[in-house]
Length: 282
Image (cartoon, rainbow, N blue to C red; front, side):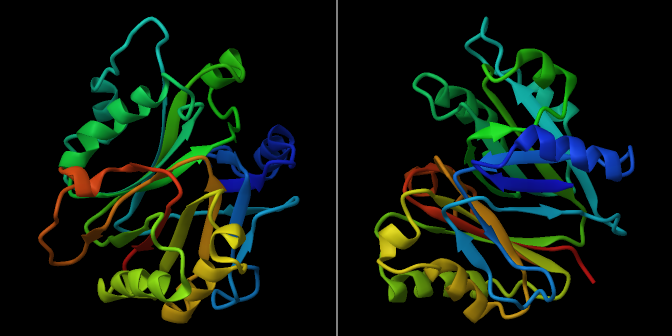
């Protein structure tokens, strides 16, 4: 299960409540962000909402799917070392995994001066892979591992979800700081539409800077409404955070992937939005 709550929600209490009602084999990944993006229950075609203020939250229970493998991962920075041990990526299924298609990654305390290097070291080796990378930097992580519970809130870490399987298709686009008008945002999301990812059995994800939203466009819900315009039946979820992770990429049934390997394709951003669609196959 993957869930996100607004900054005023008690994250640990929420995690404990989920642990009581979900099967023991269900892994839980919980985050706190400055605001959330969510599609209300009832229909996947409901209007997605950018909830930048107040208390709110959402939860996604990801079922078992034929041909799709979902795993969680968690890396804690070693304060005694300046280098990240890349062998941990292989242990987590992030290296030498030909079926890996999507990595959702979230940094905690990685926005602090001197700690962004850790996230860069984790992301660096992933740039060589034919995968979609998307996520952001969050306020807090639910202590879902023994290491996290022992270290409290002082550690620096990166955690997330991986999606592997030949049936998966995905695409992502980056709305950078220059995208501050409705028509320019619309043109970027049209690029996401042009990837031709099937809408059936798909989910949309939006990771935005807390400096965007209403104060960026002068009106609320702009990016979520544009997503719904182009993808009428895909539910959209996400959050407003302290930094965004991702770039323009397509992983489809037949494609030639352009790797993020030059200045135009940096993965770490500020004042941006990363939008992603993941299709799990039919």
